[in-house]
Image 1 (cartoon, helix red, strand yellow):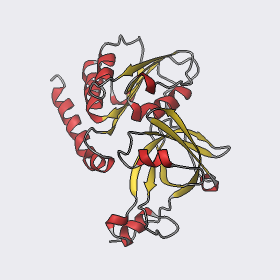
Image 2 (cartoon, rainbow, N blue to C red):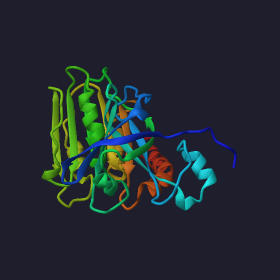
Image 3 (spheres, rainbow, N blue to C red):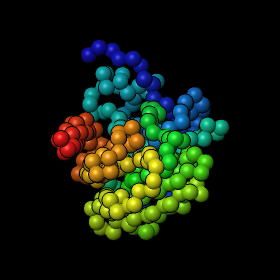
Length: 279
């Protein structure tokens, strides 16, 4: 295999851990390793957190490409993608919010056990969305996985922005207090055992859209995102330039499985919607 350019991970340390709700934990990352981290203007910045395998010694600098080329696959770090809830460059510190379901998965249990001083390795940031100052109003839609990005978007709204946000969580105990602009209307939807995203689909379908051009951010579980993408594109007639819309995850798949099938899934969605366009 040809050598790839070195991509050393950023290495920070846990500075504090906060329990936000029964199922969401915030891990704040700081340290000198973040001093050269560059963030742009996106409100959906994300990083790929690297969870090392216990008992494995990795070469330094910690370079994922080098590890994958020189070490057995069962020693590779597990990669999970998380939206940056807030970046505070003057400290510097990075806020990452984790959904926790007991011992399920890799990242959630790690976040619960994290303690100040623990190392945090990650790649990034990436990102592609920020609220458009040219839009007449903004639509924000997502489940727990999109909550950090929605919260960041609310804080990054242009002055005087009109915003309608729909956030779905497991139940009323998962509602958080968010900093919102004066023109923001936030609706919290409790899933209460329903299929993930069903309440969001109903809410957006039933929404009377205000006049003017909307800039929409719709992210979360892939099945409801697919349905809302079709609704917004075909029934509401919105062009893609007004949409930031993507599945962060898919029921029944971990991130490895979802990422390996995401491109094909998106292509299928696009084909289906093109075939549904009136001729």
